[in-house]
Image 1 (cartoon, rainbow, N blue to C red):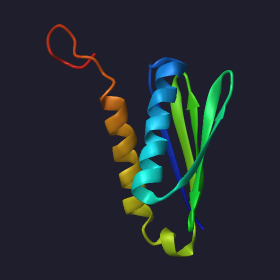
Image 2: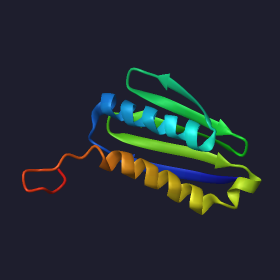
Image 3: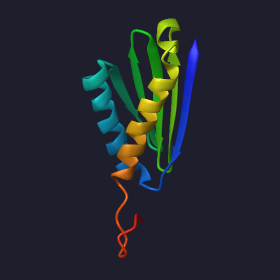
Length: 107
């Protein structure tokens, strides 16, 4: 079984990180026909996702996201492209949260 592990630091706080994670889960459900379940906690959330050949979870904390996924035999052949797609989605969602500074550069 192929595994994917992605870690992204952020400074959004838990409330904003939750919004991003829930939006990401909605994208998974719509675009990839994934079943997603969100488990809320006091210090963070876990978004579980699965479909045939893929199972994993996204841990949502006030200062980071941690994604762990296991790919079945057939999906394992596409590990690099799946990992790149997930990284692109998370990075795009996080980049959308950066506010421009007074000089027009990201904060």
